Image 1 (cartoon, one colour):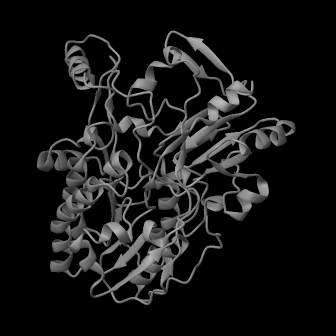
Image 2 (tube, one colour; image 1 turned 30 degrees about the horizontal axis):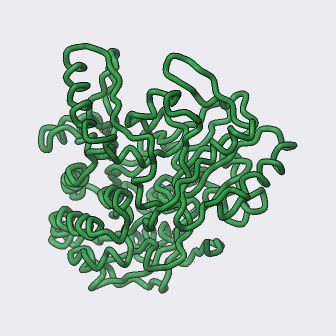
Image 3 (cartoon, one colour; image 1 turned 90 degrees about the vertical axis):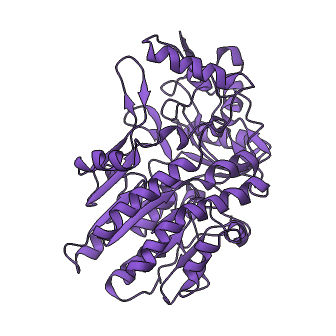
Length: 459
């Protein structure tokens, strides 16, 4: 099962090897969930549930019990509900599963797991690495393919090398497993950097197709069924929306200062947002403030919807982890996490690739901050190797270069996700995200009927 991030019918035209998957089988438009982001969509594929039930309301959220906004956690138990392989094992005991870089992988009931996990040294250094189950798998993969190329998996140097490594690992694991989940991230990068209509997008699609070819050849040679899908389509981005700055200027968001700069203070703020592409979860602790905050944010250019309890319920997003209000951006807009009003007071992590400290997603991490950024990065690495502490300042604070985004429900099926299957299964013209689990169960048990449909209105 290939999760080819950002794959759409438009991009598929540049990918003959992947298109051929459906030649003897089937192809369908694929519904997604709100928010249309990696963690939420993958959780739905694996459980057949909407975010209201599996609890993954985004790539991150405000952990109310910890008082911290956190993104990109990795514990599998954050996904509620029975996973597809657990269902299959009830009728096929011993059904073996490999997870190659799907999210929330650590601590799952899969037989084999590979997931990015940097080494954080006591002196502040961060080295590329991965976490595996069983532990011996780590050394086997590193011996064959080298260390996991973390710095091409995300950041300004993100590129095809990480997807190539992932595919190579999947080729090693597939023969010994009944279901192999493979996450292929490459399309995410240049589509956000340059936009989905840029020549770079088509080039990235061709690169992915070439990297997938050996794995697809293995599947054909061994008679392995291939299911390929995507979580979302990336659409043009033109307008960043600084929702937290709006809240701060209104006196609702508070910060505190220390030697690193200004830090969001979720403990005292009356309202703050965890931004996640085109969706933002807005946490408003006092119910008496919610009408005021909703009215304020509804008037912000770039905000299409402000979902209250009824709105969240309509989209299947009514879970305790979700914001008290949820914002959906207009089609060409997206939400920044920025909350400072003066760049001189921005926290030090704002100019770094730091996915865990930022209280929201930051696509500016895909860009270099000016012509000397690479030189500064090289100098930083050299100082680190000499044992000298320093801060890597390479990410711009200007979000204007971002050209692609996602998170809304797609308005045009050509820009939405797609589902391919190499087997001639009975599929409708459109399969909902909640029905992917049924398709996989059917393929494993001999009855392929993706029937479960999500009651989600068009966005």
